[in-house]
Every structure is written in structure tokens, then in C-alpha cells.
Length: 416
Image (cartoon, rainbow, N blue to C red; front, side):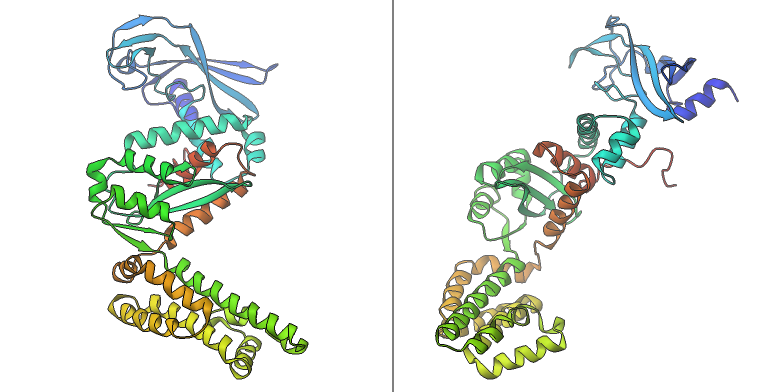
């Protein structure tokens, strides 16, 4: 086997690249590999790959960082002429071993991108000997290349919308997930109508009209933008948030009962009520023996609090049944809640009636924000792994890389 072929395989540049010479610098602990594009890969625009007439020799020889060879850093060196593209103007010619405007080889960047989704910032910096800002730039290039090859907004029919906090001080990003593919398709800093309008603007009027269902919490700014841009979409209220409202109402009743017992001199009774919090919150199937006993005690000594618990559980059962059965049970629940004479649940009945159309759509289409909440959890995990981000754009790029389906396989380990 020829030495040039061996070196091409070692560096991951065997396609469209000729290895001319290899230099070792023991003092600098570097390996410099002199390369050039093959004839068919020369004179192409670095952006669109169109063959173009030459313009000049650019800034002369240039180096691209490649994967380390053992303990030595490795660089590819080659001429970097410029071409005149009719679409993009004067640009540096395409180099088959690197992305446009990159100072690292594609193999090196794919390795960085793969590791960025799996290891910490400090580990990546030490292992690959690069700065964290460089990692962010590499991730952005890899994602941009993926988006150019596959439009994430193409073919959207059922989407989920939510916001996630990425930093203290009420710093949020809004995310959009495709329920059919399970992928994160869009994210941007902010959580208001203007932010979400940016998504629908990018989606375009025709593709907005193709959206059939949108899952979200009960935030009015989401509802307003969906109604304004997606005329054919039904908005599905997230069951988790609706049941959480019932949990909050139940906790209001528990606190009021506890305060009444405490002020009435029933200190022991008040203490026992305070300890009943988790027994009232948890689903019956998840209760421990001790919590089951506590719930039985509540049913015996405080009928109003126990009725509030039953109201919470029946609302949870509405979303367990779904479909027409769920709608019928919801109608009965609303009637019970309106006449239960428990102020927190009377108010909850009004709130649910206000969102009845979106809740009925949830029961009919069986669509929740569970996938979106799962995506939020994974974004938080990425943030913890990387030990945080100084800008939301860096976090969004990494989230799109990992959760948008753009993460490249680790070079040399592609599955057959």
C-alpha cells in the first residue's frame, strides 16, 4: 500500500485529497501534512460546490487542525486560492477535507461535535486542546450543514411548544418539537408573542396552514400566536398542567384546613394534616402503606379535604380515559366542582371551562406535551454536562445538534 494512501486513511481525508509530504517537528510536537485537492475537486465554490473560474491565490498557504496523532498535534497544509462564484462572489475555494470558513478538518469537527453532546466542557478542552468558544463555533457549523441538507421545518403537522429557563433571572428560550419525528425543530431566546412569531415567520404561510395540531400549556401568548398563524390547527392543552392546577387547588384547601386547625387550638390535628401533603398529592397506585393509612385518616376526620382529593383524582382520570369517555367524565366533573362549595375548586372549574375547547381537543387527539417536557429535561442535562453556557445561542446550537438529529457519528466508528 502506498504511503499517501496510508496517511489519507489515518487522517480521514482519503477522498478527493492527495497527500504530498509529511513533516515531523519534534520541538513543537506537531505533524504537518502537505495536501492538495484532486483534479475533480479543484476550483469549486466553498459554499455551493459549483465549479468557478479562479480569482487569485488568496493568502497563500493555510493550515487546518486535524485529529491528534498520538501525543502530537496534526495539521493539514495546502494552498487556499479564491474563486469567483456567480452566486456568492469571491470566496475561498472548497477544500474537500474541511468545511467552508473552518480552520479544522471535518473529521476533527465531527469528533468535537460528537463529544460535545456527551462530555463536559473542561474534559473536551483538555482532551482535544481547544477553547470552549471554538467548540461553539464548530457545533454551529455542523448544525448549519445539517440544516442545509435537511430542512427541520419541512413536513410539520403536529407540533409542541414550550419554554425552558436556561439561566437565573428569568432567562428563557422557546422551543418547538415535532410530535411525529420526536425531534427539536426550532428554538430561540425569549418567551413571548414576538419570539414565537419568529417561528411562524420562518415556517411560512403555506406550511403554517398544514399544521393540524399544537400542544402547549395554557399560556395566552402561545394561544394567540397559534390562532393568528395556524388557521387549521387545533390547540391541545397539556394534561400535566391541567392536573397540576388541581394539585395546586388541593394544596390551597389543605393549607386552609391546617391554618384553621392551628388557630383553633388543635395543634395535634394540624400537625397530622401537615404530614398528609404527599399522601394527598401522589397517585393512589404510588402510595406507600403509611401514606395509604394517612389518606384513610383524612377521609375519616376531614370530609372537605377528602372531597378535594377526590376531585383532583377524578380530573386525573379524565385524561386517563381520553376520547368521548373522557369528555363525558369532564362534564360531570365540572358539575361536581361547581357545586362542591370548596372555593379553590369552584374557581378551578371556571378556569377549566375557559380552556374547555383546548382540553376537549387533547382528549380527542390524545396529544400531550410529554415529548416537549422530555426535550426540556434533555436540554437541562446538556447544560449540566457542559457546566453552563454564557449565551443562549451556544446552548441552542448544542440542543439542535443533539436533539434535532444533526449529531454526526464518531469518525471511524460508523455502523454498517
